[in-house]
Amino acid sequence: MATVDYVDEVLASVKAKNGNEPEFIQAVTEVLESLRPVVKKNEKLYRKNAILERITEPDRQIMFRVPWVDDKGQVQVNRGYRVQFNNSIGPYKGGLRLHPSVNLGIIKFLGFEQIFKNSLTTLPIGGGKGGSDFDPKGKSDREIMAFCQSFMTELCKYIGADVDVPAGDIGTGAREIGFMFGQYKRIRGMFEGVLTGKGLSYGGSLARTEATGYGLLYITEELMKCHGESMEGKTIAVSGAGNVAIYAIEKAQQMGAKVVTCSDSTGWIYDPEGIDVKLLKKIKEVKRARLDEYAKARKSAKYTAKKSADDHGVWSVKCDIALPCATQNELNLEDAKMLVANKVKAVCEGANMPTTLEATQFLQKKGVLFICGKASNAGGVATSALEMSQNSERLSWSFEEVDSKLKDIMVGIYHNIDDAAKKYGMEGNYVAGANIAGFMKVVDAMLAHGVC
Ligand code: NDP
Image (cartoon, rainbow, N blue to C red; front, side, top):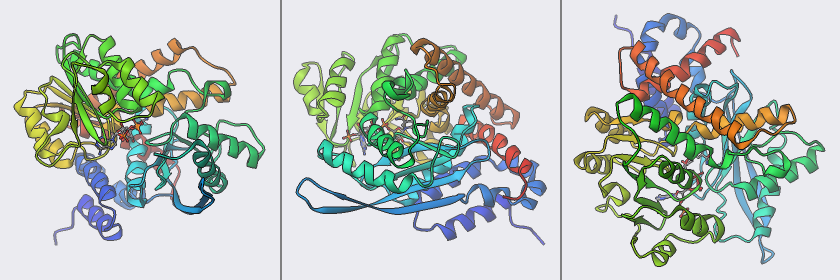
């Protein structure tokens, strides 16, 4: 009698149990599909120990009410989440996303991806993620503080420097981390490295702000170098205009490339002279304004309002390298076709899962060098782990020291995923390489810990 393939069996079960969580199913499918060769080789051991069933089921999913009072005196209620996915190689670690689109499925997809990403950094951190459907946009500082304090009042029961160390993500920057840290300290009565992305005056790390964007460029540079190319003179299309995008643009320019696009949720910019990163920082980090302000302030730039179905936004621009740095599923099959028609050489993800599964497969089939987010944006969490190390030893390292460690980690990740892909006969498939390399270390620890 033919037995059902183990990967298919687990995928079917994940789909049946989590049918209303499309992003989570998408992430699990992408990972398990690329693990097929490894699973085949170790099927008996993995089946007996239910490795795939265990790795796709979070350790726990915490959901809670977050009541807070707005400036008009009205009580508002949001939903808070923390998914502690897997702590086999270290305390749970992953950001807190504050965005109206947040739901359990999105937090689970991010937490699941985080397991493998954190493993790839080679640092001792497990996978988790959290957040809320709270929208920080348009809120006063007092309202933000009221929300953050209420959120942490519940979350503080489940986290700690050796238990679970959340960080920033979309909508959670230095201001929000500060308010949350203050509340944790107040309730728990202890000063410990329970959050990363902290301000420099209270335990934050230099270079954490730049880390994800800079790290993305370090791995992209290594990828190009290993394929006989340099960054010098390359044209780059970036999406997003947030933390990851801004510092990706900055580092790309330092490497001699020209970045000609960026975007936000209202529209996108094409600036053939190259994005003025100083101006972009002023608009996005200081004024917190929309991108049309950029075009108003710079003659060479053209602003186009929100991407529609037949407008491929930043992906319609001719470029050598594309760096999606905004959000999940922002680069679809049609966008990928446009990039290929324009002879793109490499796509490296700054955001988490910005490329749809079909678009990824199309780019790979067409020979475009493609590195997935769990490898290429791991610089953020790696530097968060370096922040944890500095907090533990009660020391602060210089910018250069952190930046040089970050660069070593990113170059190391490239070679690790490249080697893993080669080992399993999939040379050049960095998605498979990343999933395999990340997975092997976690499974090794899971097996060592017995049934838990
Ligand atoms: P930010 O909130 O700083 O920036 C996100 C940017 O993307 C904003 O400019 C936002 O526009 C834009 N954006 C959001 N949705 C869309 C959309 N549908 N179309 C176009 N633009 C959009 O977040 P980060 O830069 O921190 O994070 C970006 C991505 O990188 C996320 O996927 C995050 O999970 C991932 N990531 C972040 C890390 C970090 O260290 N920050 C680490 C690893 C991954 P607007 O300003 O209008 O909201």
